[in-house]
Every structure is written in structure tokens, then in C-alpha cells.
Image 1 (cartoon, rainbow, N blue to C red):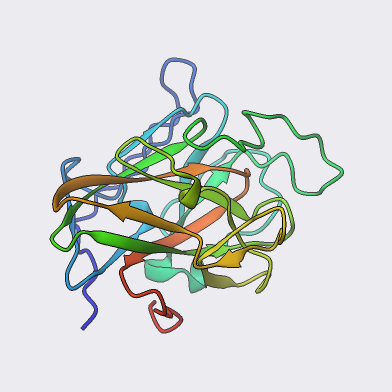
Image 2: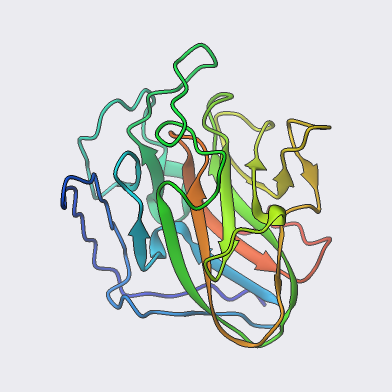
Length: 230
């Protein structure tokens, strides 16, 4: 039986702080809220993060049927209708929509994980081991389809360069890593090795601006397919 994190929701939009474009946009009423793994599976809404940092140039912003924001540029329509709970996060502003648009490392693109727009999710793990990471995302092109995932402040190679190529203009679960061999990503290469039970933090950071982020999950089942999770 799948169990999803249930949180009391209290939207908070802090769009300016100390010169940053900070958007905490956390739907958790308790910044110490924790998601609990059960039987090797944990599913979390993207907007249930408890902290966001490194937002000087880009930040994850809440998009929903209840909240409107004015962060530009954002070159596509909102896609909350088919998002879980009619809400998701998007990295804005989105200045690099095509391959011909200017790439600014550390602003519109971050190949180094943990450097731009970092989200934090506290988790409680009962069953340590290798956890494969899946993310439900919406991509409209070739420049809004990547993100990084880390554990406890570290960014292992196995969490870098999550990639989406298939399923454009729709919400899609994926767990593939962009490699030199395959730019559209190889399966089974995105995972986190959690060696001890107890409290940990899962983190996601921007790779490309414009990335749209609905849900994420971790599972010890290498062959798990989350297409029915919504």
C-alpha cells in the first residue's frame, strides 16, 4: 500500500529577502516536518519542502490553481491542471528556453549540483539501503529537463543530471541520468545510498531554469514503476 506524506498546508511566498529572489513557497506549516519511509518506499509532493537556499539568481516558485505569481520571464503556460494536488514548483525566471538562448553558468544553468536553488526535505528512514530516485516533471523542450538530487548535504555522482527527453508537454515520471554515452539518460543510474537508519535530508537543486517539479519518490525496488502514482 502506498503512503503519501500528508501535511497541513500554509502557503508562504517570500519573494524578496536580502536581494535574493527567495521563494520559500513551502506548503508545510511546520518547517521541521518529516516524511517517513515505509517498506522501502517514500513519496513526497515537491511543494512540501521545508527550506530553500541559494536563490540569488533562480528559485523554485509555487504554481497552483490558488496562487498566482509575477516572476518573469516565464515563456509557457501554467500546468497545474494535471499536477498532483493542482500544484507544483517551477524554477524561475526562465531565460534559457532554447539551445540558441544564452547559457549563463550559475544562473540559467548549473551543471554543478547544490549551487543554485536548493530544496530541503527531511526524511526518516527505517530501512537503509540503495534508494532509486524518481521525479515527476513537466518538460516543454530541451533546456528545461534536468535536475540534481543529493543526500545530507552531499551530491554524489549517482544523483547528478537527472534527465527527461520523452513525454514532452506532459507530466512524466522518470529516473534516468544524462551521460556522455546517452544524453537522454540511462536508467538505474539515479540513486542514493542511505547507509544508516534515522533522520536524513533529501535535497534537490536546479540544473536548468524552467524546470517544473511535481513529486518525487525513493524506492529500494530497482524495477519499481511509478506510472500509477498520482
